[in-house]
Length: 253
Image 1 (spheres, helix red, strand yellow):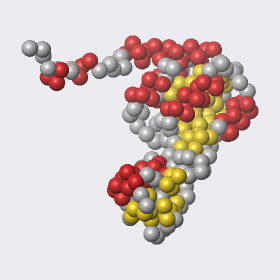
Image 2 (spheres, rainbow, N blue to C red):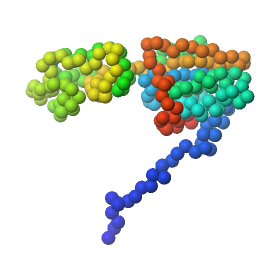
Image 3 (tube, rainbow, N blue to C red):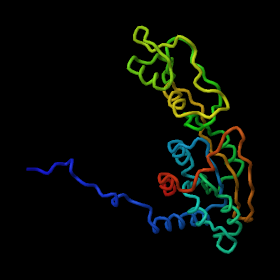
Image 4 (tube, rainbow, N blue to C red):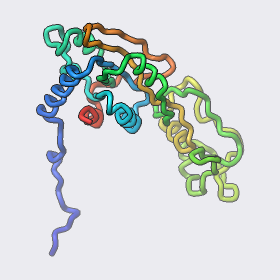
């Protein structure tokens, strides 16, 4: 009798982990790019999404190299003290690496870099815990989804999900309908998981993916210039280093 596939055991030890050799290779790669390029920028990200970061990589692949991952690995690569720094002045940049930040190596002039990143913004769906950037109120009538142009009403089979997320809908000719306006969120207040999910369902994007430049190191002088992040876009720089293995994998792309 054939052995049932349901009884197959899968050992968790088969899951690949980042090895010391892998981290050492990344450190060497960071150092090689510090030798190759004149400028090294430290950047933070607002409303981090891997899809948008990959777009940035693609657009800069011919003139820059981007590392985004565990801060400890990047800091180790450039050196955290004057005695350990790979090149003069880099330890000052390493001391600024905290949370979810990245490094961009390039020879492009600072004015070109800052202008490009000031213009690059991508609307994105907010997540639970994000602060609502505006008040969103659904009007009375059919509940509309804005993923299409023009917006279309939700189909009847979505009504249970809408109710689960807090809408008091009734079916009107097979369409989930509100008999009174419903406030989903209020500007300035953090979003709950239900609010974030509802905003995503109806197609309301309250977040913005944005790369903000925080500091610049110049290989010719060893000098460091720091910049203030924009107050209107909250940056995700407080996350614990290495909390997401996927981000570390991004470093080697």
